[in-house]
Image (cartoon, rainbow, N blue to C red):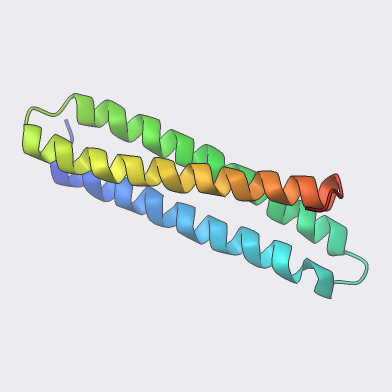
Length: 111
C-alpha cells in the first residue's frame, strides 16, 4: 500500500503534466499560423493534444477521488478534496477552450 505522501506526490505530478500538456497544446495552436503549408496539421495536433489533456484531467480527478475516499484521516481527505476539485475545474476549463477552438477554427463560426 502506498503512503499518503506518495499518493499526493503522484497527483501533483499528474497535475503538473496537465499544465505542461496545456502549454504545448496552446503553443501549437497559437503558432500554427506561422507554418505556411503545415499550419492546419500543426493546429490539429495541438487540438488532439488538448483533448488528451482533458482526458488526462478526468483520469487524474477520478483516480485521486477514489484514493481520497479510502483515506482514514478526515482532515487530510478534506484538504485533498479541494485539490481534486481544483483539477476538475481546470479540466472543465480546458474542455471549454477545446470546444471554443473547435467551433471557431474547425466549424468556422464566429462570435
